[in-house]
Length: 168
Image 1 (tube, rainbow, N blue to C red):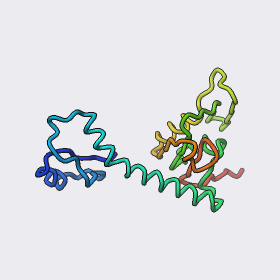
Image 2 (tube, rainbow, N blue to C red):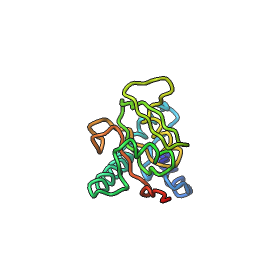
Image 3 (cartoon, rainbow, N blue to C red):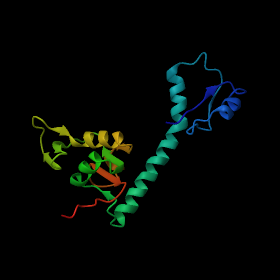
């Protein structure tokens, strides 16, 4: 997570120099913070970090487009590929469509994915589950509006490594 310092002008360079946090943002919120609300400081911080977040998201989309356009096994927009991959830590970057739900279950013991048009008892939102598993395994998740999705699917992913099927 990015760290943004807030404080009076003459103390900021001293604080920046003494700070060893690897994600310290160079730009700071200057001025006294005594009279400012947390909401105001938060809005100022968002103005600083939003371009950073937007750039990272665009780089991730560009990487997905490059991999999927070349036919690489490292990108997919297929639920049947992504759900197991998320569970087993193969997903590096996941894109899910905001406001969309895909119902079903995934049994990791049998590696069996069931999808349903409507929610039935025992179902989970597979998009949410993929996001949770991706984050749990150190991946990145971007929740995007439909028009910003890199594929014509409610889910897309970049994998850390290709699927290696066992040969028996």
